[in-house]
Image (cartoon, rainbow, N blue to C red):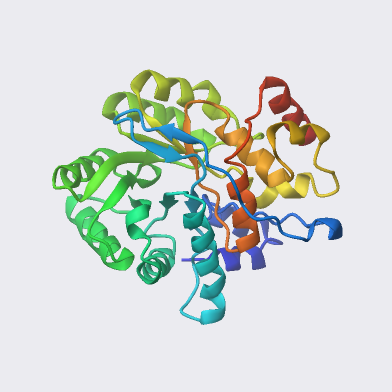
Length: 320
């Protein structure tokens, strides 16, 4: 399966890039250039905003972390050392939710190794998926392999990835929940064209979580998914808040607006993430990064104010 590196290497080939988008659906690397005056890194401080999971009331910080692309590396120390620091900063800030999948290349293996090294597993809300499998036996075998790769005996959230074999796999996830190997069950997708199908599945199956794409340029979830999640008491995890990095290209030559200071933001990444978590229905957003500095920047989006209606409109306009 292609990796995010292969995606980047082939961006000149439009058809190839399009074929790889499903793999990198949760990969949200901040690739925006940093001005020379802004190169001095400011550490994270403060307490992350938290939101309640409707089905239980358990609270989780609104900034989480994805692993698609970013954690798809080998065993080389040079590749893993930045990820060790990314994880260290994430845990130190009090963030908890980490989203992965067995189909994200080596991500589960790498994450499992780093969690074992750090001793941080007990502090985290770990989410993985039943991905690309059909039938109960395939799903059960894949989940067992995920536990092995993640070096854990349970996960907090098990999601049916991209609505594949939805009813069978969600029934399995609920069976594993009854066994204490899973705490919550969910459904995921990463494109707006799937939101009608996701909404129908939400109504019929009533999962604990849904995961869907949402950003200033992909706002379809506002119309259907968010209101339904509120009505049904379903938590929402947001992916592709940076549109796989494309939002940074759209603001490449633009300074961060002055009004960003009103919500405690000093980067475009923070504004994009604050946009994603501004709707009260959103429980957590999961941006992915392999760069410690970007991890700190992402985490800063979870403190201070969120965007009001006029600020959201201004951010949308800035990307026009």
